[in-house]
Image (tube, rainbow, N blue to C red; front, side):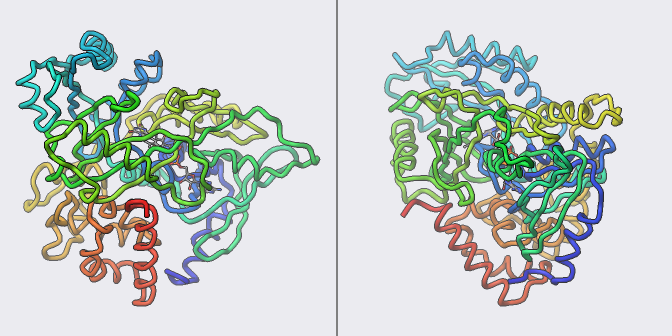
Length: 534
Ligand SMILES: Cc1cc2nc3c(=O)[nH]c(=O)nc-3n(C[C@H](O)[C@H](O)[C@H](O)COP(=O)(O)OP(=O)(O)OC[C@H]3O[C@@H](n4cnc5c(N)ncnc54)[C@H](O)[C@@H]3O)c2cc1C
């Protein structure tokens, strides 16, 4: 099936193949996007390729928190926490409308760990790292006013603290768009099949355009493996020039799955995010309001399924998360029929052999092998720190590239959006998500499209814009990552597909047959990986 004019499709990768790149980044998650941005704005001619869609991997399936991670503080990972808290503060300033403050409530129950003193001490350190004083302790009645519906038995009071949340897939897109404005180029549905060598040193890759199956060579002076949980696979694609096994200086990866539930806000209404310790094993679990729905997560279990198949929630994970909700919000009488959607992601953590997956470290690791820089692990929150660390390694491979690697603003400041029909919050949201394209998005809206898709905070106009200008090649790209309607609406947004079709099919240039095939494929994918397990 071709979704685009075949001659244009061929040109897409042909042009990239005819160029000598300084850097080829493999992987279109937040790590790859961050590297593309930081390298392009510092004058390196950089191409990024992603085997599926941008953010298709872990970066659209995270818990969507931009946070220091209080649990990492508890584990004594002060460096990771401090770095993350500082990045959170920076992103909240520079990506308003995309990275937003979120207050959290944590109930103080008789005999439940961590006790009030320890938790408040942790919060004091957390605040100190960010230069803030946001924590508060409330008595029982005040706490229940702030966080109604919470379990009242044994509650003596509770803490409130501040973190931040985002739309992870849109953050990746925003970073990619920013990189493009500095000359970076990003191609989705282009997979690296094998690596090219010049003697011992890796000098590029053989790639396949997975929409056309055309194969191309891409030459680059440095290749960066930013494939997250897939990092080991790319290593396996290195041909051994002399028949020997590659040097074993790579950390061993332990893929860990984390799954989430999405409920309608009216069934689990939260004024604050709620964080709690799971009644079965004491692991932290949270629920928070996100884009008109309530997200609940997460689990943390070993993931042994094939990484090329989308990760999905399992039956025991649904039961585990529902048990936490039923314990914490008994009067809401929540059941599985309330679940709108589910999603699961795989964390690439460095395996240190801990029995409990939650005790494995979350820091990123960078290492160099025959001219290829590999990076994995880390967090969405620290993408900029990770990118700068990678560039320090790139600099050793490109000694003539003399950049001082001084920190720069994440995003260039944008002017306001002119759209009298939208609230200031909606305009800010558009600026945060679409940067300097926000005004074009508003200008492209047809009559009635500056209204919300019911039950979400997404404007109809965003769908038109994504279809027109955001490299949507499959319907799932539009429903699951450019917009998040597939996570926010029952049955993946089936009810709204006719209107979306009327608006987006002409923008995409798909025939009726192509749309119908895409719709069928999307709904099947949704049933298999974003609904409840069969
Ligand atoms: C359940 C869960 C919850 C999380 N919650 C948070 C959170 O709240 N806050 C936070 O800061 N962090 C969170 N994280 C961590 C964060 O999501 C990850 O650290 C981050 O998304 C990893 O990004 P990445 O770009 O390294 O990997 P990915 O996003 O997985 O990107 C790697 C990409 O490489 C592509 N690829 C693989 N092989 C090839 C190839 N041969 N050719 C081309 N492309 C290829 C893949 O398709 C994939 O899209 C969470 C992680 C999980 C799993």
